[in-house]
Image 1 (cartoon, rainbow, N blue to C red):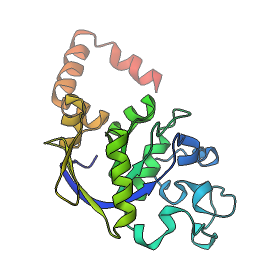
Image 2: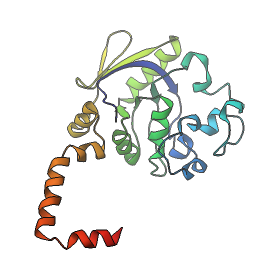
Image 3: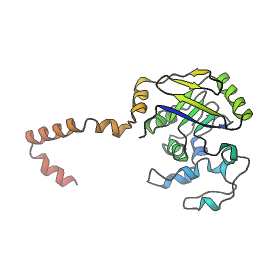
Image 4: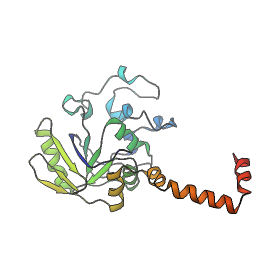
Length: 218
C-alpha cells in the first residue's frame, strides 16, 4: 500500500448526501475476483448514459456531461468532496478500491458509514471528517475557483485551504501510523515474518508429525 504523508490535489465536488456503495461501484461489477480494474466503473450509473456491464469498452460508452467527474475542470481530481453519510449501504470493499483506482487519495465529508470508513483506511484511502459548515464552505470555494486544490498533511492532521487556513481533523493513532508507513493488514503481518518463521520452525520441531498432516491438507 502506498504511504500517505502529504498530498496536494485538485478537488472534485460530489454534492449529494447518502451516497451508497452501490452508487460508488454497482453490484454487477462485483463479479470479478481481482482487486483491480474498478476505476473505469466508479459511479458508473452517474458517469455514463447507458447501462454498464463487466467487459464493456468504457471508452466507447456515452458520457453524462452533467456528472462532475466528466467535466473538464475536474479531470485529474484526487480529492473528493462529499456530503454526509458517504459510503452507506452494503459493506463492499470494492467501493474504496474503485475510488483509489480512479485516482482519489482522500475524501472530505461530514460523516461516513462505519464499514466504508474502516475499509478506506485499509486500502490507503484517507476519509477526512470536517464539520458540515467547513464542508459547505469548501463546496462554495471549489465551485467559485477553477483548478481549486487542497493540501492534506496527515502528520499534522490538517487540511490546508487555498487561502492558507488550516482545518484540523481527527484520525485514530493506529490508522494514522499505518497510512503514514503504507501498511495494510498484510504489510503489518509481514513485518513479523522472521518471528512467524521462527514460531513455525519451533512448532514443527516440537510436533514433527504436523509436517505430514500439512501435506495431506493441501
